[in-house]
Image (tube, rainbow, N blue to C red):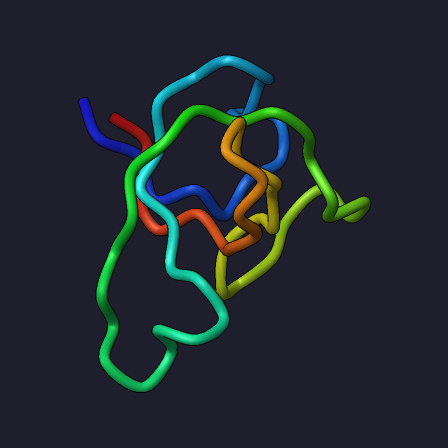
Length: 65
């Protein structure tokens, strides 16, 4: 079951996600990776929880694999 990544409770370090990087906001291109750290402190965010991936990239989660 794919989730949309707007609830912080659904996110744990190490899970596989698809994020929209800041530079890809206009195109909507998604990048896959594993969560290293959660940056969003609020329990929900309408545009997706912001995370750092294990490769160091930062983006908002659009889909949880």
